[in-house]
Image 1 (cartoon, rainbow, N blue to C red):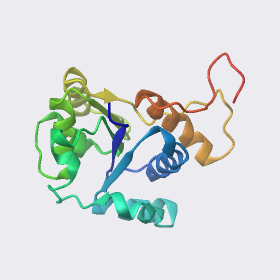
Image 2 (cartoon, rainbow, N blue to C red):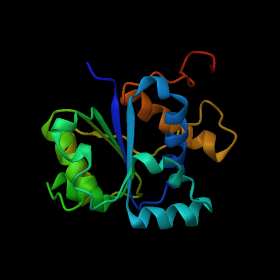
Image 3 (tube, helix red, strand yellow):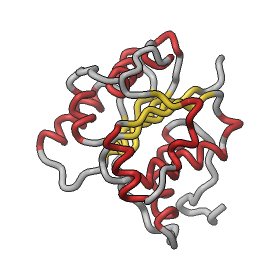
Image 4 (tube, rainbow, N blue to C red):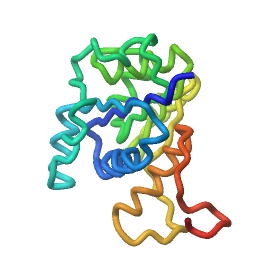
Length: 190
């Protein structure tokens, strides 16, 4: 079996810190994957700059794909990417994925992951949800996707914003099947 290949899609929803922490943690877990490909919307770049005041997403340049690059290896099931993480996942992106609208590389890759019965994790970032959001989450769940709201936990007593974001990211990494050392309920913090 091929080593784990992951697509990280970053959309323009608020919550760039989640994507940054995910990319940092994936860099620390390099022995657990063979390839991490990143695709990011223009809105996501603007939100990242606004929220984080920097552009560290550019550090993934060798595996960075434009949203209109349908030649990316994960735009086809033959690319054999096992996991796709959409973080943060805007409700517009969620709606297009749930509706089967493959109008850019993110929605095409999500469609591929679902049709191949692989793992799609959408870290939705919106509040409150309206009925359309909830129905789109239901549709995606019924199609085999995983909805993981960007809802942090606090029982590990996070002290910084990055630590708060990590409570969500660690769950995402667990869902992706990676071995991450993090706080576990009922255990000492590792």
